[in-house]
Amino acid sequence: MPVYPAGPWIQPHAIRRLGRHSADTSGRFNRGMSFLILAFAAGVLTIVSPCILPVLPFVLARAGKPFLRNGLPMLLGMALAFTAVATLAAVGGGWAVQANEYGRIAALGLLALFALTLLFPELADRLARPLVALGARMASSGEGGEGGNPSLLSSLVLGAATGLLWAPCAGPVLGLILTGAAIQGANAGTSLLLLAYAGGAAVSLALSLLVGGRVYALLRRSLGISRWARRAMGAAVLAGVALIATGLDTGLLSRLSLGSTSKIEQTLINVFQAQAPGDGPMAAANAMPLTAAKAEAAPIPASTPTAWQDSTFAPLAGATGWVNTAPLAGADLRGKVVLVDFWTYSCINCLRTLPYIRAWADKYREAGLVVLGVHSPEFAFEKNESNVRRAVKDLGLAYPVAIDSRHAIWRGFENQAWPALYFVDAQGRVRHHVFGEGQYEASERLIQKLLAERNGGGVRDAGLVAVQGEGVQAAPGNRVLSGETYVGHERAVNFVPAGGLRADSAQRYEPAANLSLNHWTLGGQWLVEAERAAAAQAGARLAYRFRARDLHLVLGRDAGAAPVRFRVRVDGKPPAQNHGTDIAADGSGVIDAHRLYQLVRLPASAGDHLFEIEFLDPGAHVYAFTFG
Image (cartoon, rainbow, N blue to C red; front, side):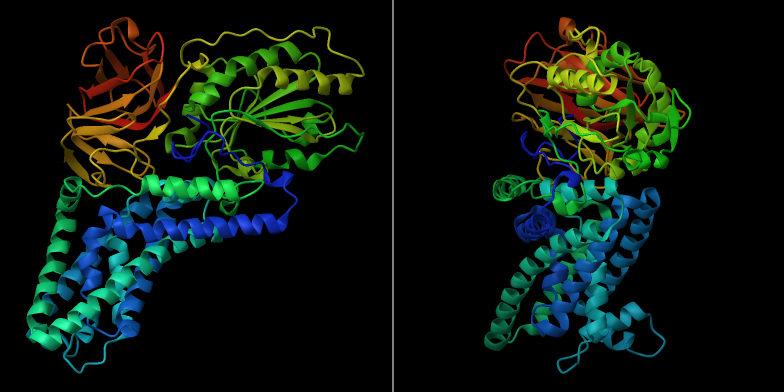
């Protein structure tokens, strides 16, 4: 997983140093403003995204009415509702998704009633009588006659209802924002970024509403067809409600040829990265993790004796559990050289660093090195303590591991990537950090240097460890042109057909006949949730065209369910000698736990290949592709 978790849209060099290494406060402010502008620009681009189409009739239904009392409050309500729902969905878990579903049902009812008042003015008159429902009265007050005085509140509530139904295509920028919210928790910065994104969408919709209003006024003056135009708009709103309620909007969008805005957003990200110095444009997201394919190192300050820095390890108090040790604090590590490794057990980059970290822990333990693993999860199943304990045992990790399921230690270190290594000297000072894979020789030389400072002399064996990772822990191959790809709708990209994922609702998908490099498709019955896709029936399929030596897939199954059988094909045939460590030569395998599975191991990474997997039982959970 090329250093998590913003997705494949961040380029390999896009990495940010820790806040503690940045002394320029004004630079941080400028970078924060840059990311706000980036979020706003991505929101503006939604007007050319197919995902805006289902809610467009709701907005255009206000054309012909005074903008300040109708269109503007409606768009404001839409932006605020989207911001609130997106923040809760990112940090609130399943209960927030369920609450949003109830809100969607209420919103559909309110907007359906609004459409009926457009179609039948006499209904609006009846609903204006006393003791009617509040939502119906707001709808009628907005359309209650030629000389009526529309209510600001009615437009605001109708906008909020629209915001509950709007599910924008999650492109690179929105994926970054939602990922930061999930990792860092709810905060004002995240909500501000979401509001900037929604504000950008509202601005583009406002322009379309103003243009629509002028067209409506022209038709009304020249042709006198305002009554029929209103009825036509009511029919369009009712059709939009029906499409969203039945899920047919997803099928319709999947057949449209409108292009995705992901490439444009990626270009904007690259521009902002080039212009923003230091920590990069994402600083406003409070240490939002970025993608990187190579390690980055911090400069090593000169060695000067200081008092013990107990505050360095204060974040350890936030651990939710410990493996291989009793709970540790700064006092337990005083006088030791400590290597802190932030990792998560389904991260391919993290797994490929483990052979070196295990070897360093064994070789330098007697000299005073303590390796401290900090397991900070990305996916929900990695927060399960029993899953973490099983992974630590299966991976053969004998050193202490802190379980950081609430990301308290992550935030305390102001970390921003998996894997991340922090080198702490015997005085408790962070002397160095490395993000991502690589720089193993330099890292080991630094360990030897810090131990020499501690012990007053060099280590007995100044040679370097020789390791050879096996299976998923093997070093990556050359010419890997495929990057980590998430399957959950929150960060999904390159799905074919574009815009065709139905969020949080069971849907039958027709697989695409042809796939370009790094594009993927679904077939059969699937439930696509924020961070995963669940196979709702036996026979569900997934295909991906890739170029790499190794293909991995993060998989899981329903809690307490029997193992899920699956079958893999490469270029339309069983993989034979090209099978990964987790399947047989005929392509058969089973999902027995939530973890990363190596499914393909080619001799080299030359050429494109079509990967296909079919789940023979229901209940499979698919999270992300990674490559090596």
